[in-house]
Image (cartoon, rainbow, N blue to C red):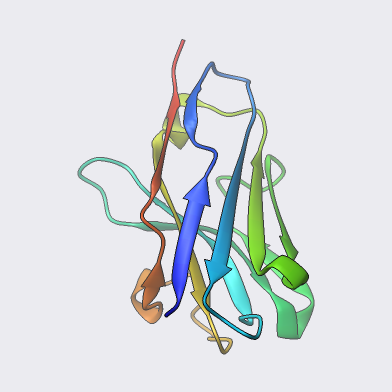
Length: 125
């Protein structure tokens, strides 16, 4: 059974950093897409970034570009989200996701069926 297990959230001051991890357990092969979405209270789940293995590239939302970095270790079926220069508007529950095959609309949360339990990130002074 596929299960996404996240870790690494917490409380951080503006300008600080956090690193999230997510293991895609239960698979015997790596998913093409591994990445992250987030959801703030009262808002729709939004795209943060993904690693697309088949395309050997990563995609990021404009709001996090230059501050967040996604990396992955296929041997461990694990994806990481390094978040630097965090701001209060980054406060949200962060969800890990994976998809076996690539999808052109990778930024749309409705194209994913596998989700982690979510990890809270709070950026506050």
